[in-house]
Length: 364
Image (cartoon, rainbow, N blue to C red; front, side, top):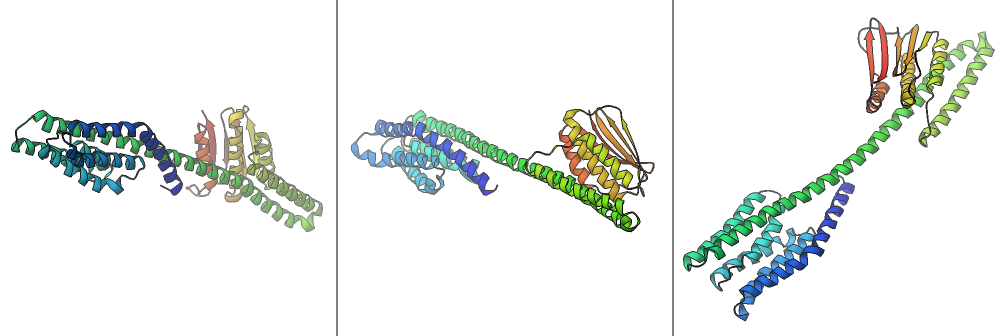
């Protein structure tokens, strides 16, 4: 977990613990006073009983500050000493309350052996009560059954409560991871769009520059026209890049079809466009991105002589005859688009059929 997520988790836990401090500390203090007063028979008994009650209150206050580990050992020692002194010396059946309270706060937070430590605490409370009954037979319920039963119940509830804080921490971590993933997805989306714009333009500029170089002597007017188109294309790309930076870019599918047709024809590739129906407005932009990326891949990787583009109401299919060999090349741009199409409920496939590459994006 990174430092920011850790801070958020600690902040949430801190608010919950402060709420516990405000709502539960007064009853805890009252319970401590009652335990001491009920068993107090003569004034000096307070010197035996009060430390256990104080240890329980201190441990609870430190627990609300998420710092019980710092006082756990001394408070447990105090509580563990008070119980046998109370049971064996001053006949106090409630002296176990301090050690049980401190243990219920500290033991569930142990990094390991927390359940074994809980069983040991319950066993210790029971052992002292049994020792009291062996030395001086008395009320089994007061010295054994109630201390052991209540301590076991408190420990069980404490484990449940600590699990609640663990769940809060897991939820905070999950929220932070979701936020980080959203940022990563947005960065990937931005990188994909930037690749669509810049990669497409650079390959087209390269193609047109090479064509202008060939025509500069044979057909100066045509060469000048190609250079003018390069200038316009670069200017348009600069504008699209700015729009992308401000989240304003929208692809026009009709314009992309016309642009792809012109590029293929300029490269000497025969083009046939079939428009069976208009694409849904929700998916038109993604289809335009698929078309643009596929056009770039054909110009860059394939030795195509023919391209067929079919637009339907639920998708687009682009077929070219530039396949060489029996394996598909790695097409990273389309891999990124495949995830985006899938997120919108569609499917983008690239396949090799009888010497032709087929790129199809379909929304069901």
